[in-house]
Image: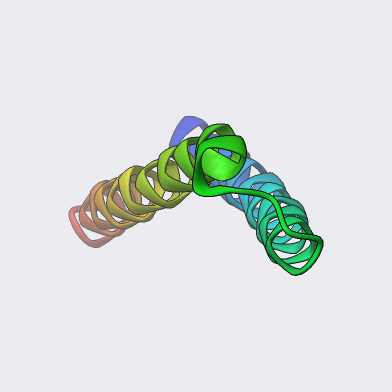
Amino acid sequence: MRLLLGADVAIGCVTALLVLVQATLLARIIAGSYSGDTLGELRPSLGLLLLAFAGRAVLAWAFEAVGRLAATSVLSR
C-alpha cells in the first residue's frame, strides 16, 4: 500500500511539473505570436505543448488507476 501511495505522490509531482511546462510553453507561444513569429517558428513549441497535454492526460489516468488499486487494497483488509 505504501508503494501505491508513493506512486501517487510521484505522479502528482510530475503532473505539477508538466503544468509548469505547459504554462511556460503557452507564454512562449503567445509572446512569439505577438512579436510576429510565423507558424513554422512556433511549431516546435506547439509540438511540445501537445506532448505536455498528452503527458498530463496519461498521468491523470495513471493517478486514478493507482488510486483505485490503493482503495481496493485498503477495502479488502
